[in-house]
Length: 179
Ligand SMILES: CSCCC(=O)C(=O)O
Ligand SMILES: [Fe+2]
Image (tube, rainbow, N blue to C red):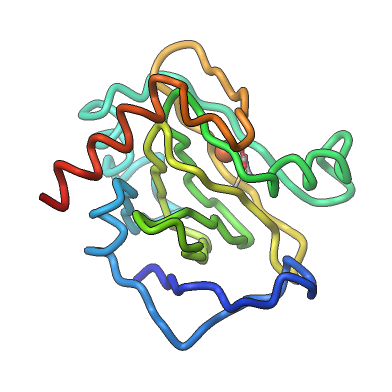
């Protein structure tokens, strides 16, 4: 099961540390803010049909993969910095972790940081318009599939991006969800 928690207030120390407060977050809480999660078999996903089914249901037609580690990611230092700047996208961010681990941080409805630990076999979908960021953990390694609906657009829009339509739509969806 995915592990998630509210982050502690320590903004000084290494982003790669867990920054775990005692307040845990469960899947239902993640669903309320539009974050979806599945546990799949990362060794057999090509043949067991489960990812295929999700892809068909959600229209994920595009796929490539990304390896984040100093040796494999071109422009590593810059990319790691960019991933950790608070941003949103106009589309879902979909990652299936094939190996390694890391943290996706997402803002909850009250603007508090929730840290989601992702490990091998985790498929996570962040909704369009959610403010978020990504960091590697102390193992400095993750290998993930990136999925997308149609031609991929990876552009991050750093906060503040409150006037963008996907942000407006996302905020509205939160209000409906909690009404
Ligand atoms: C887990 S994949 C690495 C991070 C990433 O692709 C992103 O933040 O866009
Ligand atoms: Fe992102």
